[in-house]
Image (cartoon, rainbow, N blue to C red; front, side, top):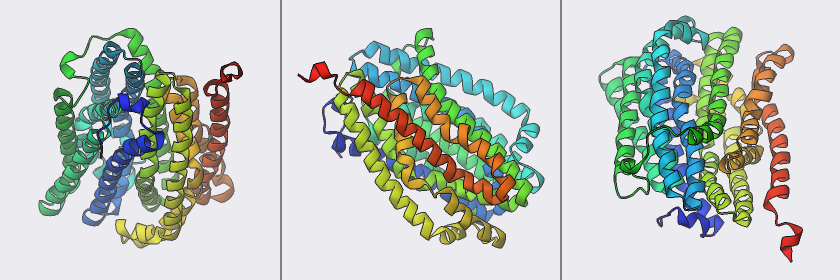
Length: 453
């Protein structure tokens, strides 16, 4: 695959460029998702089905703290892409330096209380009954590594903003492969159980951080760590915060969703329902990897060309990204409608889980073919630095529609209402996103009538 630089984002054909950006991003997300998927399979088969539920309880807490790094990374990377497009190297370096400082300060500040109040946090997120013990073991060990994960997530988005998608792919592959190897050694060979699963995860974060540090110290990067400005620059922080708040809010809503779903489903069906949700959740992370790859590949292209005021390329990138993502989402939909039973059997042989999970999976993915508009539309506003519409569109599905629905629909349909809430919220969010995206393109990206002569 040919090398892509930041300048190429403004000149190469959009379709070809999107593939160059999206394929490495998709492969990276695939490997990372496979890591989560296979890790869950290992845990389910080598430790037990309750261990799957335990990890699902811990994920929203650890991922929310780590998402600070992703939020700072995506918010800053939007600035970096536009700064590189406008040939403002100093602003790009200042932004990157501030990203590093902010990530370290904020994640460490959250990890400390996260460890102090562990006995209250785990039950609040659904870690009750038999789930509590293994969840606590996993939570404490993984939380030690969360600042490293946050730095990795931040650095990965900056690598992609530079137009280096292959290196961003490597940064996602290394910890994933490392985690699987460590899983086998620590769980299968040494029989360390949940301790082994947790240390394998934390060790994988360190491997990723080592690679990212190497990248930014090497000649491969345009933004050298040694050239950065680490002293906090408040105008930059404000811009990073306004854009990064979109990502952080999304992850906060995801964490709240996990909290609510684990508790609601525990009340309906105990550990079995929580485990079913954990398996479906893994498929949500894994199955849509090519769609998320298109979204990640689209971000720097839209941001760079918007910064360069090349609006025709921005329009083309939106339409191309939606077409590619919709095609891939349709393929995923067909696969999951046909094979949910076979997929579930990979995770566990628990008969109750095998019965409950497949119909839940079909409902959760029922609206998959239309989500491309929702994902690309929200990503567009974030890429061009319009924080408010990006935030609103990002929170539409889970925050404004899904959470109210999981309280309303179960009154009419019981546990089935929880699963029905997924496609209903997808449909509603897509309709609203399509309206705002069409309005934005019409008002700001089409040439004015006076300019067409």
